[in-house]
Image 1 (cartoon, rainbow, N blue to C red):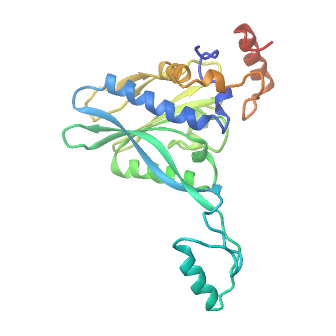
Image 2: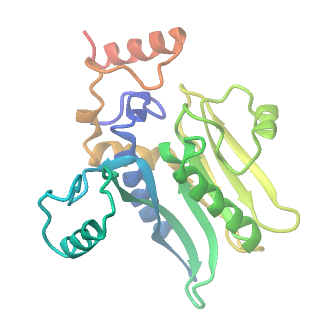
Image 3: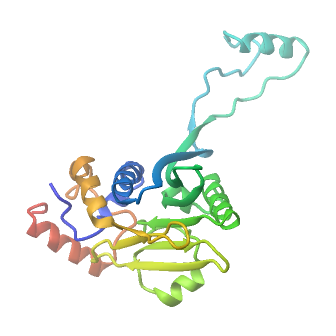
Length: 267
């Protein structure tokens, strides 16, 4: 079943759903790129790992006093510390590492990094959080290494995140809901933006390669449609039970509900 909307589906921006959308988009973008890249280039997946303090689990061993039951390697340390007179304090929850996927286009011959392709995640748009810091470090590495950077921001919420400055984006695309930012490496670095409104079809975007090499164009709507169909997102959208997160404007909500009713997805 295809997505009922002409472009991005705002029901898929919910924090519980978008991480799966993110990973599916990376998978199908890689397939689309490898089908389009000229000889001598290949798209491969990579990941960065960071710790998000909000994603915590109960530690394997909790020690609250000298009589607490402890087993395994931790027992020796606990016994030694308590016998030395140290006072046991409350445990701190353990933060599991987060693995975030992105794509790299490399030259086949020398495996030189040419272009990085990112789908912006909710963690990248959390002000002050490790996911955002890690993402911004990656942007800086692309600038310094003269690597092209393509960023897909399909999230309406959160602070501005892509490599182009928020001020520049407001000048050229003041009312966009989503956008694609393309940073072309060189001296000077050049930025290009594809602004996207909620009612727009996702664009066809040229992906830059080496200087003098014609960029390859990827149809983002075709990639998203495949993601929606093969990822089972028609079942996860829950159009009758959930509201988009963040909420739509009243005008956008009315527009969206008209589409869903016309498709038989709302009563």
